[in-house]
Image (cartoon, rainbow, N blue to C red; front, side, top):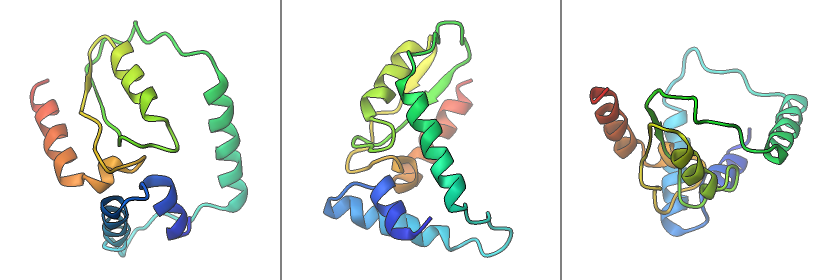
Length: 127
């Protein structure tokens, strides 16, 4: 996926969002060995079709999931609307919502990685 697309998809168009997005894309370059292969255009299109179909379905019954779940997202997600994150956390019996990361989109956990890792470790330690 080209970096401009990742920036558009994962980050919001604010000064802070663009800065955090560029830093995220630079961190992706740090790992030089054993990297993931690039996705093909046909696979990318197929993924978008599946996501679209999934988005049209009725919400799943999550009341039977009794495992603790940490739910996180950015406040302005283009890919999975942030309202869906709030709904997910509310419908999971043991869902714990990380406050939506300000100035962040779908890549909120990557843009705010230090904060997220700290919160995730705290969540895991409490289990």
